[in-house]
Structure formats: structure tokens, C-alpha cells
Image (tube, rainbow over all chains, first blue to last red; front, side, top):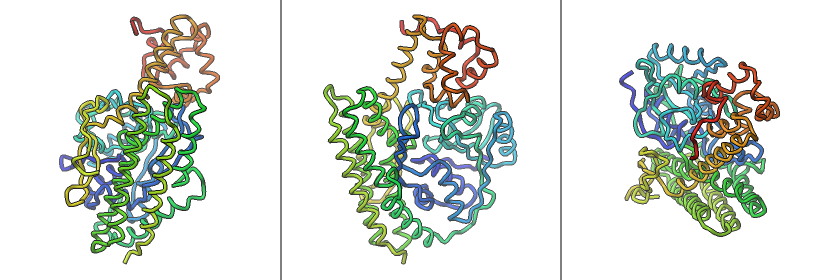
Length: 331
Length: 136
């Protein structure tokens, strides 16, 4: 499989799917994959804890990019899970011998090639295995600049961990990839879908309401244990900025998608405007991370109200982008 | 963000790796740029790391004092907590807490210890003791 081409991506699952489809003859950029699978979202799940802290997601649930793409592109993906680690490794080896490139979900902690300081127990990472040499897998991890190598012991462990969002040995690969896709109607449909979902979520924990809910929780940190409050704030930024999880990063990917979509619709002015607006919102998320980092380092009481207000503001600015997106009629 | 503003802070947390970021060029066109690190992210990552290290250190002292079994230290040393360890082993939290008791842990079945070892990626014999000379 020397013909496989690795490309550096901003997010693991969209990066994997973009590379995989390209390999099988359908060229879609990472932002296009991200947009077509309507991966941009926001969710704050105070009841689902990761390391004692609530899950904050800036993108849809793991596997949703794979599943939504499959639905929207008439693509056929094969997903296999395993309860036995040994069997999951044998199956991977078998698929590689058949000449396939294979997507896998893994924990980050057990991947030996990850920077030591980035190894946390997060189970929803994605990568492509494209070959095996001796005991080592050749891996295209989209969030790494270059292909990496990983021992079978390390990879199999990373695939077989249990817990929140456990990978269950998940392997995936396409069974059918269309040669050509009429993107325009799919783009139009999914832009609407994403905008509506963010604006009108029925539950207070998702979409823009989720952002406002998180802002309220931050304001309440003042009364909480100091160590917890600091960890909570750091956690928001980590979920937002750390490798492949990015909040601001996702706004930039989606803004890039809107730009690419605009080009397909003869430089549609509405989409170009929405792209610019979202780019600015992405910058605001980064400003937010900067302020949080500054407050974390300050040797005084953290200004929770200020941080909460910034988030409120972001949610209002994002609302404008989604309203703009709804003005696009796909003609 | 424009491509010139993409931070290149060479964060230690990246360990010389680069992260891909979509940013706009002079014509406002999106392109992918490698970032060698960003201080804001590094601060947040290190805050989390620091907390994990502190927990491991506190656990080490507590085990040394005979308050808890070595298992308690190993849990934090592999960056887990009771929740993650419970999920990784399939053991109930209360039953893990029982194994934090030094006396009970001394008589733990090798079968149960093997499950811990597997989940934590450590050798069975390693789990039985506190590693020497840490934090000195």
C-alpha cells in the first residue's frame, strides 16, 4: 500500500474519512467531509464525566462523521467491533493483507507515539492503519504532520480499552465508494440542518443553548472548590484546543467548508459572508481560551463572571452565523 | 485567523509535533497551516497534567504511610481515577475501594490482580509494590 498518501488534518475523524475516500477515488477535502456530515455542533453534558469533569463537545458524537457521510453520499462503510483484543488484531492484519487501508478508533493514552504530555484517557481518537512491517503498524494519524509507527502491543491495547466511548476494537473501511457525487444538493441540505440544529435545539445542553448553559455553570464556579474550578476551566480549553478536539478549530474547518461550498455555487455571497462571520467567531473562541489561560495563571481570584460573559457573547455571535446560513437557498 | 497569526509557540506538550489549523491567506482563502504550539493550550494541558501528577504524588505518600495499598498509587500513576479504573476493569467502585485497603490487597486473588494489571498496562508484580525512589 505504498500508494497511500498521508495528509495533515485538523480533526481525526474528518481527516480519516477524507484520506480514506481519496484513497478509493473520491476526492473530498477535510472541510467538505466535515460539512457534509454536519459535524459541527456543541454539547455540554454535565452528567457524562471524563476524569471527573463533564464532557464538552464541539463536534458530533464519535462515529457520526462516518455514519452521516455514509447516509449523505450513498457510500457503503463496513464497521466491525470486537470483544476480544487478540481477534481484533488478527482481523486487522487480515484486512491489511487484503491490501485495504483500515480506519480504527483508539484511546489516546495507550498510543506510544503520542507526546507524553498529551496522553490522557480519551477513547474517541481515529486513525488509519495502512500497512504492517514486522511487529509495527504503519499509521496515518491525521492530526500528526507525518505518518507514524506503532508497535502491535500499543495499538491493540489502545483499541481494546474499556470505558466511556470505548472503541470496542472498531475497524472501518469502505465497501463501496461512488466515483462521482452531486455535492450541491447535499451541501444545501446540510447547511440548513447544521444551522437549525444549533439554533433550535430542544434540549438545553446542546447547540447555542448548551453554550449559554456552560456560561452559567462557569459563573457558578465562584462558589465551588478552587482546585475543581481551575480544572474545570482548563478542561474547557483542553476540549476546545487540544489535538483534534478543537472548538475554535472546528469553527475554522466549517468556515473553510462554507468557503468551498460558496465556490461551487458561483461564489454565493450569502455563504461567503457566513464563512467570514464564522472565521471571526473562531477567533473569538481563541480569545476566550487566551483569557481563560491568563486567569488560570493569575495569582488572584479568577474572574468567573468575565469568562462567562465572553461565552454568552460567543453564543450570540454564532447565532448570527447560523441565521445567515439559513438565508442560503441552494440555488 | 490569518496564516501569520497562527501561533508558533513551540509548546513542550506538542513534543516537536505540529497541529494543523485552518487559517486564511492574504486573499482570504483558507489553507492549512502547521502550528508548533500555543501558550493558551499549553497552560490548560499543563494544569490538567499538574493535577494528575499531584494526585499521584499525594497517593505515593499516603501509600508509604500505610494508609492505602500500592494499587491506589498505580491508579493515579497511569493517569486514571476511580471512575476510569472502574470502567477499565469492569469492577464496581466499592470493590476497588476495598482493594485500596493494604490488608485486603495483600490477600488479593491473582485473577483479580491480573485484571488490574491488564487494564493499567503494568505487570502483576509491579502492582504489588510501591516503586522505590520516586519523588525523592
